[in-house]
Length: 350
Ligand SMILES: Nc1ncnc2c1ncn2[C@@H]1O[C@H](COP(=O)(O)OP(=O)(O)OP(=O)(O)O)[C@@H](O)[C@H]1O
Ligand SMILES: [Mg+2]
Image 1 (cartoon, helix red, strand yellow):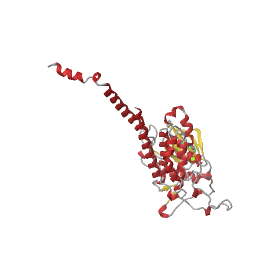
Image 2 (cartoon, rainbow, N blue to C red):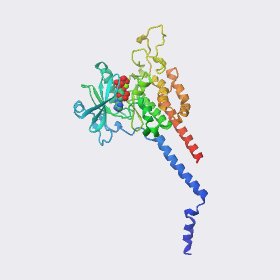
Image 3 (cartoon, protein in one colour):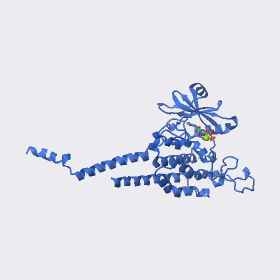
Image 4 (cartoon, helix red, strand yellow):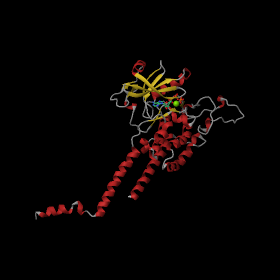
């Protein structure tokens, strides 16, 4: 009788589980692990660093800082920030990698007094639009024409291909991460179109390289808007539309309503140009996303799935173009459906 319990335990010993059941258990375990790993790829947090939203207005927290600090004043910028190296430049700002309290920061200096209005507009936008979609403001000094922001070592989106070609970033050079970047770009445009100030148009984007240079790639591979010097406000209810500059624009990158409509024989005249709305940003999405998707294994499959929404973005009638939210929803659906397809293929292989 004493031996009975031992016998029943023995009958549950692993060596007595039939091989087929063990194989099934192993497969179930592998499936669960795969699900968890793939789930991480698709749901990895996009905006984990430098979210000034966690600080009250006028404050910031970057890197390892435990507490929110008020934006630096002129005095603090002059005495506590050490300028190290020139890292970028545009028409309005010259940007220097700098050091503040042992942290890397970006110090922007106005290039020429003629551009002061754009510089101040950009600063005002930075102050008002602090969020996870926009670079973190650390301080400014209008008297010295300086702005201090969080430094992003990967630079602007113009450097994306170079960055992804480095061996240490090979693991993120996949269609999944690149589609997430495209979603990050559309997310930033959506944020500007629904900003706390109203519907803002990303005007400083007349060609692809210029557009890419206005956004930074963060170290956790998300996208933040950086150059907010030309963000006019559209107010549909008051009939207020915008014009991006006063010069004639050319090429396919800008929306058709931004082009001179009266042919080559009629000289360009700005006051004959009709204003337009935020749908010019939607027109540009397929080109920017196309660049972000690049040419890696699987990116053509993603392009195929995005064909219809991108075609709609290129509608000649602005009102027929989708909203940034529509584009985002489609990107998310494509991410989900391709994830499911990849997972069921992996299951079949097992
Ligand atoms: N915080 C930052 N971290 C890293 N690089 C930066 C940062 N801010 C700016 N840069 C680099 O400097 C470049 C120029 O910056 P920015 O676009 O703000 O200048 P700009 O003069 O306003 O440009 P534009 O000619 O478009 O008006 C960026 O494209 C980027 O390469
Ligand atoms: Mg710029």
